[in-house]
Length: 272
Length: 253
Ligand SMILES: Nc1ncnc2c1ncn2[C@@H]1O[C@H](COP(=O)(O)OP(=O)(O)OP(=O)(O)O)[C@@H](O)[C@H]1O
Ligand SMILES: [Mg+2]
Image (cartoon, rainbow over all chains, first blue to last red; front, side, top):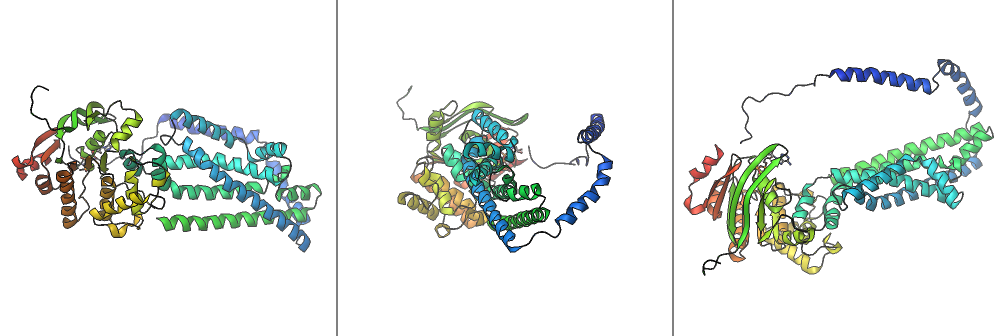
């Protein structure tokens, strides 16, 4: 019983494709065609849309950059970011204990793991805009409803991925502490969470990016933020202002993604 | 008791230990008894199952068959609480060191006390009671690394992290110490220091030390007893004094 091998056989580069796989490809193509039909795909409309789109652009252009509009939209954008950051931070905080219950073999038994994971799937399955509608009913119009929607949305996302991060973390340190007779909660706090920390940071930054994108649209249903300006702009055919809103959202979302990328390399890169 | 002669207490009793990973047999029918105090060397070729045997005895991975009694307690069917109490009396140095990265060396060593003193205060050196910090520093001193207490565990050399893992295993003053290749990444001088430390624990504190090693010289010089694994079975179980290096080399063919 040694690891030394005589004349080792190289594994094949590719597995031979099974016959079933070919049938699978054909069925897959048929499925895509069926979906295009269901989505009302029409070449006619594709051909006729550029002129109409150009018409929208010509009426929207140039964007409304008057100082008072910019100031109003700017403040709305600040409120949007406040909703996003508050919701994402609270969501991340709530996610940690929930994820500990969802992670298999950490502190809770399989029944609890499964129940929590199913609940998190449900939370994710409900779109953020639907959560916003629910919270508008529950706490009234305004940014607080939006923040709660972001919080719940973040919980669905981070709860699941924090749990996956902890399950994927190196098991060695946890085994070493378990061998000293440490309790599960101590093992989680001392070995599993520190090992999963860089992954948590990365997941949380994604959650923040997601929260910023969601928060720009929550205003459509009256849950605060700049989305309301977009709706009003289109409803009143004030396309130049609507275009300003769109550009503003694009700039902020791209900036946040960039900043979060920088933060990710700084925090995780430094910890390697 | 059939006779009046005092029988030395048995610390480890293994009977018919068998382990398979899935369908792959690793070893079978391994039985031995180790009395309190003294050092036991476990030797055998790469991949023969030494680490697996140690982890099975500790109960961190399940046995396929067989029973183990540690410190007089059968490890099968213990309640979670009883299992933790038992493990708190045993120290383990894993072959892969398994330190917690990103935490300080001192915090890592303090974690060795979690079995005896669990709870938030032992999560980090910053919160730990003075007695625990002192104990951890003394354990670090014993392996010659007190000056690295503040260093992050993932910024250590291989040999340094090995010695921190040893400090973590001895900080709680275990009655049984398992060390999986404790000298594998140590230079010759540091290796001798660590083996001397183990010998002091075995002789002065009657700790039962079980170590694996690929160093035949270490196995014979520091082991009172030598167990040899080969071909999935225990092929050798003898006192070190009765063995010559050639007897051990036979295990590697
Ligand atoms: N978790 C696992 N799942 C499947 N096989 C495993 C697992 N862990 C170890 N093995 C296999 O079991 C065998 C014994 O491994 P083990 O680590 O116990 O060997 P060892 O005697 O300690 O070797 P070394 O001297 O290299 O440390 C090896 O063939 C290894 O590939
Ligand atoms: Mg090994």
